[in-house]
Image (cartoon, rainbow, N blue to C red):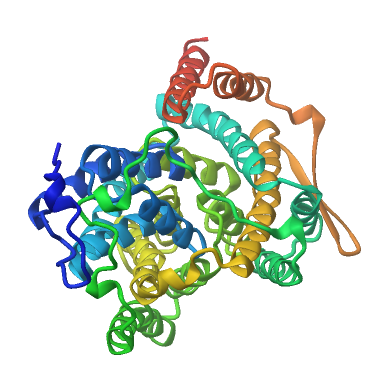
Amino acid sequence: MTVLPASRLKTSGSARAPNHGIPFGEAVRVWAKIACLSFGGPAGQIAVMHRILVDEKRWIGEERFLHALNHCMLLPGPEAQQLATYLGWLLHRTKGGLVAGALFVLPGLVAIMALSWVYVAFGNVGIVAGLFFGLKAAVLAIVLEAVNRIGRRALRNCIMLAIAAAAFAAIFLFDVPFPAIILAAGLIGYVGARAGLPGFSGGGGHRPSKGATLADADSALGEAVPDHARPNVAWALRISGVFLALWLVPVALLVFGTGDVFADIAVFFSQMAVVTFGGAYAVLAYVAQQAVEHYGWLGPGEMLDGLGLAETTPGPLIMVTQFVGFLAAFRDPGSMNPYVAGTLGGLLTTWVTFTPCFLWIFLGAPYIERLRDNRVLSGALAAITAAVVGVILNLAVWFGLHVLFQDVDVVRVGPLSLDVPSQASLDPVALLLFCGAAVALFWFRLGAVTVLLGAAVAGAGWQYLQGIG
């Protein structure tokens, strides 16, 4: 544990270097440790960061940590990865943010890529198919648990409940695009908060800990604003120019050059990076609406397989998009080897998903103090979070229909579009595995990784019994 003497910890002043007392090499090791331990979705990942950076290392104070988290929740994309980037930037300027954000993604990138190869090579073979069969049922329970967890935090009054219900109806019954739902919710929250309506006060958030807290003044970083954290227009223009080029130049080259599946991947996931507020499950709703139904890159069951892989590997759950990009390019490789195309598709997906995250942080972080206690932005965030609950509920219902039933028809009546399952196609084994996973999560409160592994083993066991039966 790194604990600096109180005499050094309480030294403040704007001229103090941001990495005072914290060697960059040690910070790299700590960020690598956090990345390897980051299982269980954003709540678990944020808790790991809090435990190591605030409680153990005492590098960041409690209030600064929570303020940084609230800022990241206002941004599109994975808040846990953005929080790591922001805190790394606070400690060691731009290089600290780059290292922290990249290391947070790297273990998941490697793991998902390796498992994607295994999936396309052996996914339909015996025991492996059974493993993924079990994962599907458990992931359905995990998505329902996410609805419950986020809903308890976000649906604090009738207004938020109404926004969630409207979002569910819009996407489930009328196929309204996810970005339109988010924009409408944000506008409603903005107007409501600006009008002073009490139902729009405050935003959602993760509270990593309770009890004794570390004051900012007693942390290694201190409570003063570091020099590099102050607004600097010249720096902001330079950094935004660099990351806009890193993000959009490859997209433009693919769109105007190849025009193939790689161009579609680049454009689609770039759009996703701009509009996906609410974390990985909200992303999945958008991906399911487009990648499955519009592009036809993969099926609903395969989406569940990808989420199961992302849940059981370190890193952001949004890494499931790498799995989607891999399958999209693998199945439409053109003149390439399918495995090479799949690898490039997965890497391209990850690049256009996470490069914008660095842009949002480096461009907006110096202005973070201006967002503190901003009532209008908090109201917009609260409404968006409520809408995300409805979107995730739609995702749970959509997954449930395709996991528990083998035959689902789409019935259209005017503007209405409804998925109707055939009752005769209900899979009793999938239903049993789902119920077992739900009991483990809601009743026994087991961790997501434990539940996923247990369901995967049960699915493999069932597949084995089928084989010898």
